[in-house]
Length: 227
Image (cartoon, rainbow, N blue to C red; front, side, top):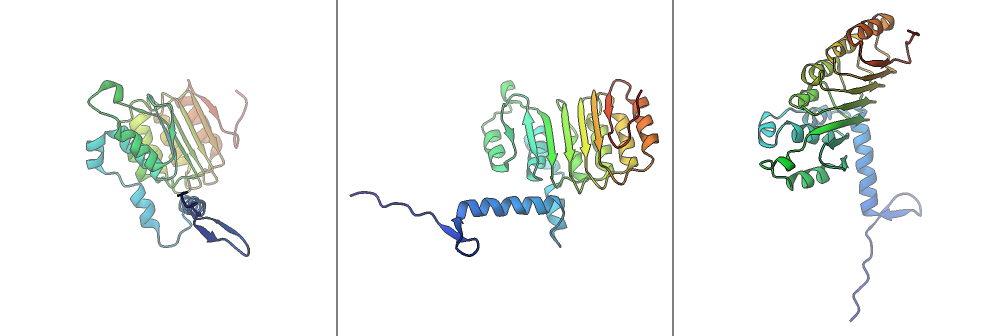
């Protein structure tokens, strides 16, 4: 007897328009994460803080690199390890892949090298996860509407001597006080700062960063003068 054909579950998406339920749920998840990153969900500030909670017990259990990876992906960002070619932006895929690793084996001791927080719901408190990231090279904060100045302090204190590339773009809560913490990032080779509307005294902070980071190529399109 021939197997019965499987009929996909459909959901209503407007007059005369039906789409598969799985696709509908994926779209709803994407919208939710976008609104969460924009902090555009009234009454759900606790969700953002929960995503950014620094769980010391979790760090002890899985190590700082995996805990940081879980944090950034949970917040809607992307992460890359040194010994895994894939980039992870899906939390379940990250957990499944890391579950295959045996931390007792040197080949399975992976380290976070790249973090991309683009339209992500990371906060200043969440940046405590930078502690212990000894292989981090590249960090990008783009349109992170919940990132505060003290997040840059946490990051600078933890990985300022290791980080090579940093981008901070369109993060509306960052001020000149936050950028001043980047003086601790003495390992930087390239720094891109752009579209930070709450930064005042741009000439002053630009010159201070140039003096503090002489080996770093600083790009600040909002204020940049020839050498």
